[in-house]
Length: 110
Image: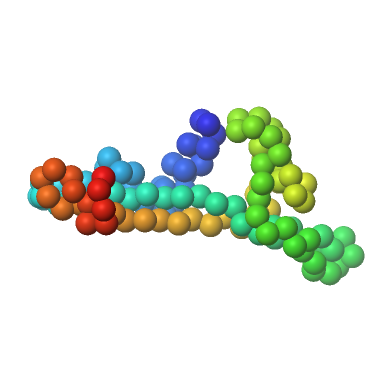
């Protein structure tokens, strides 16, 4: 779990994102926003034909950890056997604006 949190922090720094706590608007107590970032590893981009001078990917569509979080097996894909670093990193960021003194969200209840 600690390794996953470290990755999130590195990604947030690289893309200049803020966590929910630091993204509060300091100018007004009536308005604030939460930034939520979700990390997903998509299709495998490892070139399987590199040794023969070609380019071919195996067709693995999504990273699935082959072990529990925090173990070395968590970095290996159960579908294709590649390291997680070969899979395309996909970040999804949501900005939820909150308005009102009681933290009522514009997108539904908090």
